[in-house]
Length: 191
Image (cartoon, rainbow, N blue to C red; front, side, top):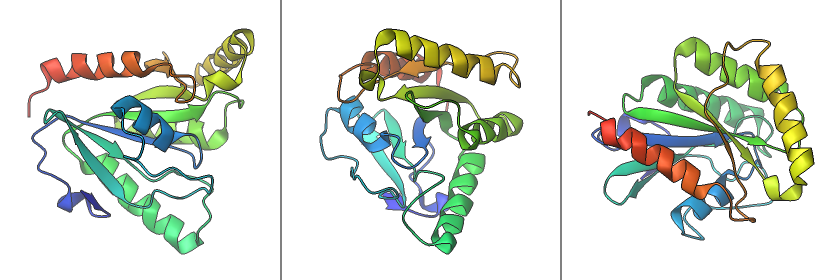
């Protein structure tokens, strides 16, 4: 199901896991990798491909939600403002949103837009995890250095770091960790 109105989303009777991140962070590729479905989420080299709240039912047990990226997208400012409005409405009012996976490009230093977004989630009490993407593009020492620098930046504001995952759709890494985490949460979910 795809739409821009949270009230038109499926009945909130199953746990829901949404994926969000800056435009072109590798969100659609990661969703396709996690679900073993090459064309479930539309991928594009052009930022702003995802423009709706996209629900996918997984094993008739939980919902995976592909949200539009935030930040830069090749679209008008009015479109971006509309997206921001329905995304925040969804995040703040979706009662069965169990976890928001915030995707972060592991190659980049901490970006203000990501830090501000996660701070907003914290202020609103929204459960989220950090998912570092594109880890195959770095050596393991460079990746560890980047992750430590990110952690240091986060600890300037946060008392503790949210659950963190490292992933690579191209390098086939991180899928089991994310699915295991979802399985643990599903085991205790009460609609």
